[in-house]
Length: 392
Ligand SMILES: C[S@@+](CC[C@H](N)C(=O)[O-])C[C@H]1O[C@@H](n2cnc3c(N)ncnc32)[C@H](O)[C@@H]1O
Image (tube, rainbow, N blue to C red; front, side, top):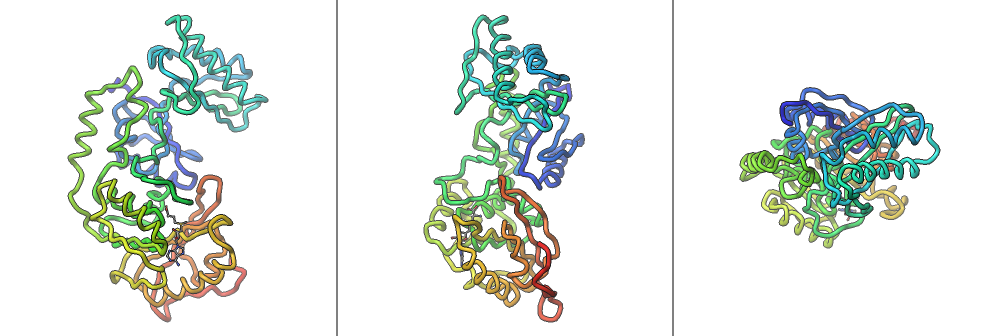
């Protein structure tokens, strides 16, 4: 299988397509195409293992197993029936079919989902005289289909659990960032492992954890399992070699300092346990502190802040009072630093009193957000926001 180039699609949080494409190139895949919400790429089978193991930003890696034009549900059924599913998995494995669509003329996606499931089961009945059963919660095999106005594309999900589930979270906390979004923010901020990093509102520690994994070259998927291990075409020996090669590339320590803090002692405890579980507690200097009490730990560095936002997390009037203080804190103590604020509150530049040098639109799930970049310079060089009507 490794002599042929296969087609894959790696979805990611919207807004991170550019950094995901760069990451896939860096993983040794030159043939990529950027689309809204992900990167299509062509590569040998074992490269798919490598992308699943090493990507910080992809949400999944889907293997494109077929494509056909369609006009009706029956056309989709016939196209799905025509694929050699029994070559890829067995009828004793459970399945789940997920359909997504853009400009699809069919009236019910639920009905198309049912037809695809029927086609797969009918195919197994005709070839193996046994059909797989459906498990909507923990299926062994996930099948994806994407319908545009005239073409149905079928995928087998090679990841299983989404790739942002690295297996490091000890407990769930309120509003943590997804790991791949945190990694994408670090990449958009241009952070490299030789830069000092400070996350002064670290919550459960997602950003510093991703930074430490990157700095130590610990593959995000090093200690989890993947759906490709359950496919009949899986090459366990090759996978074992790749995983071991990746483990041998891990560094014993980080080159630059990573600082993290939060005012909430419970969050600090959770972050501590998470860092320990991931084996990077020694790489992150974690403490409990109000952000405004912190001094810059170095002359230069990158600040990445994900402040509370939204009705569940904080009242708007509290944020209105907080941001001008955060702006003063940055100006007084962090000249020479690059500061990044990731928020869904588009009033932040106005409230903080600094003009962003860059604003990158991103989506945190369905929530439209921005990553604002502020170059903190001392005294007279500082640009102030001229009017309160500046656009977000
Ligand atoms: C949106 S959460 C950060 C989530 C984090 N990125 C994660 O992935 O878990 C915002 C955090 O800011 C912290 N926070 C709020 N006000 C603070 C302050 N004045 N000083 C330090 N931390 C503060 C909260 O305790 C909360 O953990």
